[in-house]
Length: 181
Image (cartoon, rainbow, N blue to C red; front, side):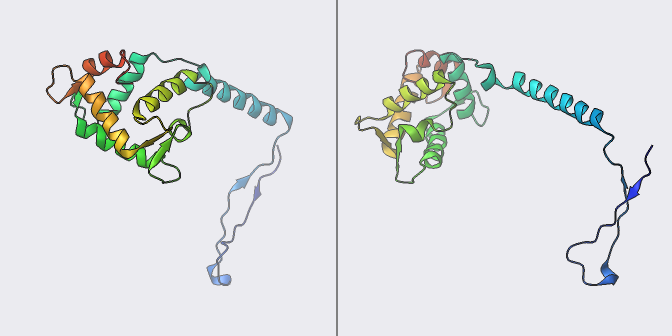
């Protein structure tokens, strides 16, 4: 077994010998190739676990109903089992401002789908359909007014009992028809 070594550390901002502090801790040099090999095996194991646990790597596709449920959960921030038009417009208004990369008050399709991995074509297609539905004048850009009007159309289509509150069941059912995508 090799002898232990000590390391003396001096803070970078010390002003003279009175502020010098030394910290002693054992330092053991690498024991050779076995330590490196076991470290690489451990790293490979962790990488495999990460690969298997990450949905993007697993290439899972999501149905429209599953997407609608996730979107509903995002809109129902108070966890009341419903959301209103005001809830949707508040949340989507913040999202609009955040994803408007050049801050020109209009979204392009590339701004709207930015960040979606290329492997997730199902999600890109879903977002592209949603963008085209929101683009009322079909000029390839969505303004805040168009986006808020789109939110109103989604709520009107989904709120089947017209009580002003969209439940998960109503939202998922409407998403199958394309209006709430």
